[in-house]
Length: 411
Ligand SMILES: *Cc1c(COP(=O)(O)O)cnc(C)c1O
Image (cartoon, rainbow, N blue to C red; front, side, top):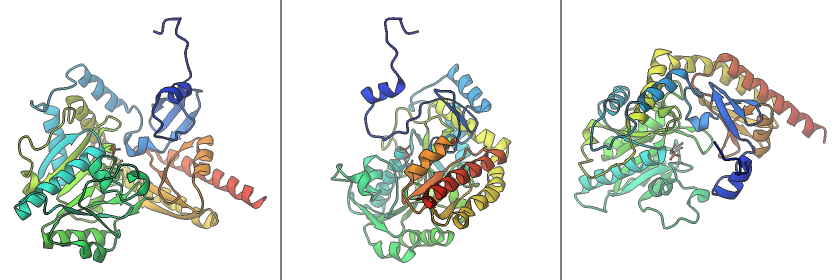
């Protein structure tokens, strides 16, 4: 469609000249995807085990999901939340069915979902103390990540995220993950909630132990605090259960979810347990774009496929042998691989040194993965990844680790 007078510039040049420099991007331009595979602009294929950072749960362009979006796009894309649409009602029902009796609010991202939970904590604080601005303390975990908006960023005690943006939102305190006493010690009369990721995604794949989660539940019951779980990354089947907290058998009071929910279409949501759901009243929160017919059609298509194809069961059965294979690298390459941990298709490979050269080498060998905190490589296959694709990833890892070991040995 470009008129001939326009000079075509390379995508890299377009980014260099026009896109904000808030990312140090890989030198890779992706143009097409299918399942677990993506193609770059030179026709090279890659196994995409980033899944857009735990987003593309059905892989790229799953035919059922594409058809659902196409159908809805020709029907009705957007209506205001001042009106109802069947898709939003149905997706809320399906989430309530999974989470438990409660209510759902739809937004567009994980950050917005976390903001909504933090706002809920303030409303609970008002209900508890009878006054505004008193009971506002939310206890979070050290090394947490709750997004880049002001509330979530204030709940994210990492210098690289907070630097330059102070003053932050008041009222957050930080305890040691998996140390119940450390959380208990911070509880006082002004505390309204505990907010943690069920599995920390950005800090190197650090799971809450089941005992710890159950302990948090007890603390919250004892002190009338909300137990808020950030499942933005670990939820929607990534660990082989729909929510990661299901492994521990706890019921939270609020859940933030987003990444995998739309399968690549932006959608976020919070679920609030029934006894706290009426803290939000008309006018107390809102969004223009949240929960549109199109976004909810994408979410419904994801849930349909997860159920129809027993995807969570496949994640559970396929991840076991795959994790065991990856775990062998600790013995095989002891100078390089410190630990392998995670659950289902949310896996971290902790290296002994800087991970950037490994991520580049893996890419050059056809495997895309993401970095995480603490020299941890995050491996996030789509939930529909086949046993062959998982085996292929192990093979590529082994090739790269062996080459690095040989290079180090040859020095
Ligand atoms: C990604 C992420 C967020 C932020 O989600 P965005 O969609 O990037 O705003 C929040 N919490 C956790 C645990 C995440 O992994």
